Amino acid sequence: MDKRTMEKVKREKLQRIIETCRLIVERGLDPFSVDVEDFLEVLREYQPSLENMEDIVLDSEALNQVASVINLQSEWIKKRSTSLYTDPFLIQEKLKALDVEKLARLFLKVWRPIVELEQITTKSLAVSAKYWRDLLPLDVRWSKTGYRQLPLGSSTYEDLVKRRIISEKTFSEELEELWKELLDRVGDKGKILYQEFVYVESYPETLRRAYLTSFLVTYGYAKLEVYPFEEEIYLIPLKVPTPPSDKENVMSYPIPISYEDWLEWRKNR
Image (cartoon, rainbow, N blue to C red; front, side):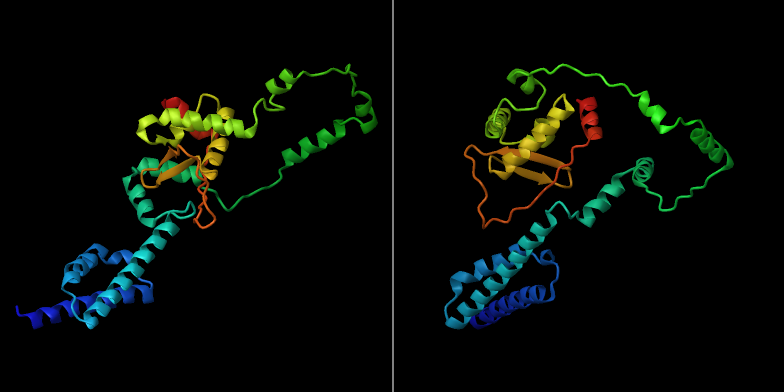
């Protein structure tokens, strides 16, 4: 292939990259429908052979359009990584993996009938009438209410702490203590399952740890690593707390901790 033919082929490929990327951006098509790696490989291959200004401009435009598609891919991932979005493909795959019996049980668990029939019967009317007929007058009922005066007492600081009316430690001290525990538990592994760290033998204490852990993430003591398809959440402690800057896109990720989930965890330990 002579040089002129090679130049023609190169320009056609660059033009094709530009048109494809521009079509995706302008029409809002799926940014993952093209292989960006292939486009970058073509640009990388032709870059050393760029000689005239026309080819350089064409190559720059192609690179700019590829960058626009990569930006769309980034936005697509950000939107779908929020807690309020679940990819339809993930739902479809999970449903396919369930057996019929489990699917039926899940349906019964979440089924909420929208029609309800209420009616009063002769028997319920008779029971109501008997209740009101046998009910004593209000002044008689009140006269039977007894009151007992108790002596005034006092509570010590230790009593108030024991009853959880006040806390023995400040909030910042509790955060620091939990952060150090997270660092010790993780060690060289780098991360730990959220449930493995937060869940403990007591449900109230589990809720307290979940509450404090949310502030560890918010204040930059730790990060969350979420795998939606595997339904796994990891905690990654930071050796130096780094609060998120105002320029960062901060996302909220609610993690429900129901009593039933805690019982299931305790049962399967």
